[in-house]
Amino acid sequence: MSREDSIGPRNAGIDALRGLSILLVVIHHVALRIPLRETALIDFLPKRLLNALSYNGYEAVFVFFVISGFLITLHSLQRWGRLSAIDVRAFYLRRAARIVPCLLLLLVVLSVMHLIGVPNYVIDKPTQSLGGALLSALGLTLNWYEGRTGWLPGGWDVLWSLSIEEAFYLGFPLACLLLRGGRWLAVGLAVLALSLPVTRAALEGNEIWQEKAYLPGMAAIATGVLAAMAVWRWRASVREATLLCVLGATGIIAVLGWGGVLWKLFGNGTMLVLTGSAACLIMGLHWRQSRGLASAPRGTGWLRSFGRLSYEVYLTHMFVVFAVVGLFRLSGGDMRHGFWWYLPALFLCWTLGVVVARLFSEPCDRTLRRRWLPHAVVSPDVDVSAALRRSSTQG
Image (cartoon, rainbow, N blue to C red; front, top):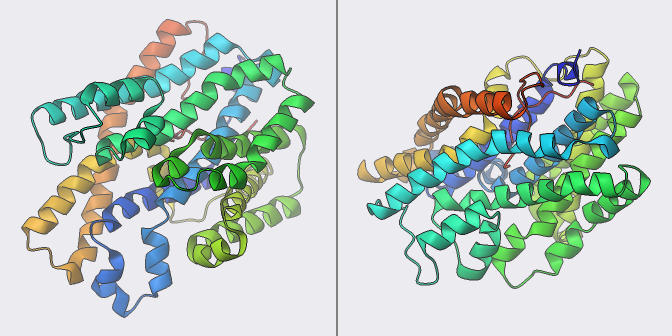
């Protein structure tokens, strides 16, 4: 049995967490244009709940980062036994097969829409250009480009997180080899993970750059890497795993629902509460599955489906958001009934993700792996993005 064959079954709980995260991203981008708290829902749902649903897209991306670091590291350990034995070429080729096809397709579509002048897709700031946006997206510097020149149109803007994530993974296998995947690697990752509040605070004054800088996002990914190294080395009891799930879920709910209170208490440390809680929940879900326990409640299949498609949904959801919001405004823009437009938006985002995955990204992934890694069993890899989608976690 090859190392690829040793990759175990999907973890339903992690799929559900990823699904919740992509759901919050999509809802956030709709809510910026059709605010839930201005709809009739405010008459019978708490404002805190509506705000939690509407304005946690950024926090959801950081949960993606933690999941990405965990899954990619765990899969590397499953394939090569230890991080010091990581095959750099195979690692990079797997990442490219998963990431590049969808990225290139998105850039082609966005470029065509810019050139023919489709509203919401035209790059029209004097400090920006189509060439600059393309080079920054391909060079994994789109977050830096926005920090220097301003916000890009929404379809381009989603690529800021991919720039951070893939820049991290360019250096990750080299760091594993240089530091021999052991104690010093863990120390370096811990320093990076704990630096999150400091690096965010140091960037105050530039809203875009503070939100999209490399180091805060990489700190979240490093937290996920450390979590994977921990579950690879230690095995928790059912009670310990359940406790971690409770602590992790409580921390995430606190940040999403009472973030304003936590920000007053902890400032930028609130993001560390979020990433640490996400890591606890993911470790607990992994250990529960390793003990043969269900890791996701019944009735969450639709949410897990969003999680499995999160990369495709993340890259393409702004096409749906702009279309649905445009139709809403053409219909008269009755804000009281605006909440009804969320349902078709979410369904269409999921549908577009299914179409892209089945007709393009998955076939491309399989084809490229067969060509580039002919001696490996072709099995889906994991990532976020971006986040970052596939979530097998059983060693």
